Length: 68
Image (tube, rainbow, N blue to C red; front, side, top):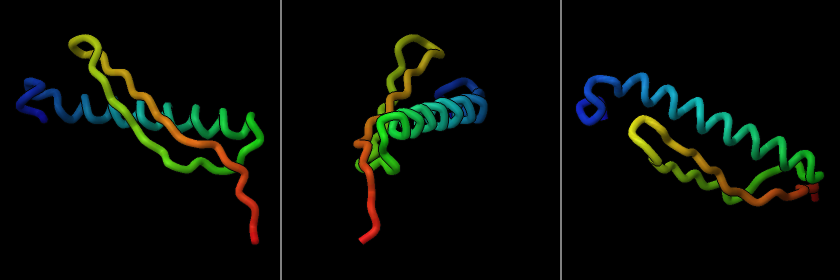
């Protein structure tokens, strides 16, 4: 990765990780607002839209898990 990014690999990966964390946090927040307490089938999609700009999208299904 670093060679592809001209030596900026570590910084790029750190920013990508922060973006994934933020997207997941937003998914969890939305799940709670909908009355859920868990998310299943989580999937991340990363798309580069411009040089240096990446969009991270997370998909999942909000559920209300109940103990048996």
